[in-house]
Length: 95
Image (tube, rainbow, N blue to C red; front, side):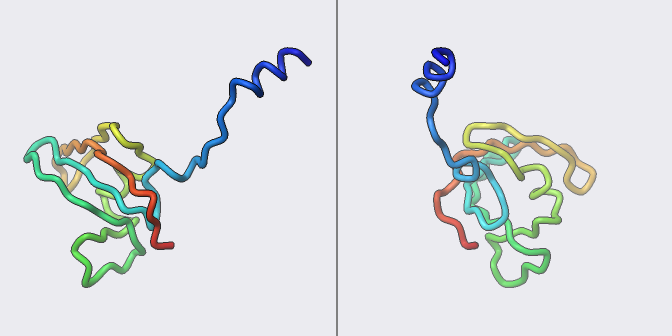
């Protein structure tokens, strides 16, 4: 019991979705190849007018989903290696 009390007193309650990239989250990334920074939203599979939104089914979204601030995520986009640093994940959500 003492062990459990010690663990509980040292624990911190967090919202696991808060700082991770996910559907409806707004986040900022830096393309490590070009140095370009972008603010992006991962939306539904049909994204038309909003140039800041990408489909959850896109290559970019598949690379970044689940990422956290400060992480570097890499993968293939159109057959080319791409690397992005996640600058921040907003607390704002659109869903």
